[in-house]
Image (cartoon, rainbow, N blue to C red; front, side, top):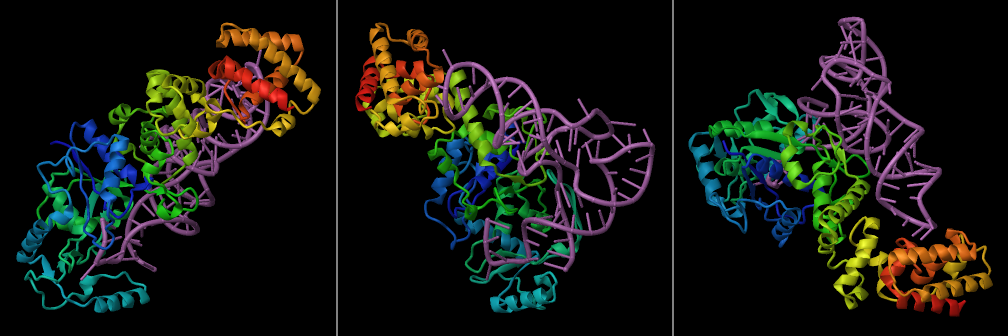
Amino acid sequence: METVTRFAPSPTGYIHIGNVRSAIYPYLLARQNKGKFILRIEDTDRERYVEGATELIEDTLKWLGLEWDEGPVVGGDHGPYFQSERLEIYHEWAKRLLAAGRAYSDDTPPEKIDEYRKQCTEAKKPFLYRNYRPSELNYEFKEGVPIRFKAEPKDYDWVDAVMGPMHAGAETQDDIILIKKDGYPTYNFAHIVDDALMQVTHVMRGVEYLSSTPNYLALYEAFSLDVPVLVSLPHILAPTGNKKLGKRDGAKSATEYRDDGVLPEAMLNYLACLGWNDGTEQEIYTKEELIDRFSLDRIQSSGARYDETKLLWMNGQWIRQIFDTQGARALYDRTAGFWPESADNYSEEYRLQVLSIIYDRLKTLSDLKEMTAYFFEDPEIDTDMLKNNKFLKKLSEVEIEDLLKKTIAKLSEISEWNEDVLQDALNALLEETGKKPAELFSLIRISVSFAPFSPALNLTLNTLGKDVSLARLNAVARSI
RNA sequence: GGCCUCAUAGUAUAAUGGUUAGUACAACGGGUUUUCAUCCCGUCAAUGUGGGUUCAAUUCCCGCUGAGGUCACCA
């Protein structure tokens, strides 16, 4: 049987990274088995619906490279893929249950239900609506009246691919609402119908649905459906506390990370390995490797804490990996929009060269903005920075001036300006002046960049070019 | 409160009866002619607790503790 998985978010806002993993795992499983990955939009809650959320979801999946085989935009044989466009289907399925005496229209006023619930809460007992079920049941489909499942509670045993063998008693099943009074189905009902119609073989979702599973099992049974493989994914925990990572912890959307210069490879890699591993000590995985190695039985059953530091470390690894294995050009192609504005005035070739000497310092692509500004515009001379430098503060102004002059003289003589010649010249200068590298090099480095840090001195000078380097050194010499 | 789930260093995890409990991030220290980073080397650091079973428990069983989920006309 073909493996069919799905990601079924509700469009209530952006999907934050805590949820993205629920898209990654089904995607990996589908690709591994040459099956299908479906995107289905669960927009049955009209009050929480957020305009534009669907586009945000699509953007996120596209950015991460999680292309879907059926769903919005691409279509498919089992559409529509918006639940709001499938109301007739749910009604029809509900009517089947009504006809079979397994569901009933229930117009008990909400206040009454709240009262029952309150009684239970006060008595410290779980609330089960079926204990308050009306004695006369209405099996007619009625507009504007909720339809409830008529539970026939019993014991269930099933296997969760992550949690293992599960057991639940009769107390876990209730008369859940199938169709709300506004005619929209509840999640509990709609996903069962859709998964069946779309031939979904693996249902992956957060552990919070584990408690409701017996109700789903009852529904599958009532419709004589095969139960798909059930996969409960543990929560991703916020950096502090023990709560699930959520928007109110400031959980960013995946696209925010994109805009901050995180590579999709790194995001995918990090999230996939948060709560899953292949048993080896490998840390960096390409998407293809993840597809190849992924397995349900190695998904962790406990929650995993989200650690942005490790994400950023991984991003740095990916930046270097792309540069080293695919070339400077490949990395450069990812940097559009991350350069300082002044970089626009320079050629692509020059920016490429800057990238080549700075790339191993990047944690995110957005670091380019602050780390490369002095390559594109003359820095403001900050004599305090020179004087307060820990290596330079022992030197007098006269000494500094003298060193700058000697440096200018030496560099002026160079006719073939390249990194090797520069290194030789710098070494010669070191010998002539008798200064330590820490002193001389810091002086030159700061004079041409006025940046807290920069690449190796000969590389920086080489990229800057002879004219710019000398001009900056002269400017500093004059202002001492 | 009922039901359910989870439990190895600060974090993510490896090891499913036998290892000096491994790896990575972080932290700390050192090296690579300046800085920051990369890279390399090193240090610190863990089986929640109490009982069993066993020659032997991180691993199997039970109690406890702790954490989380769920008990919506939200998903």
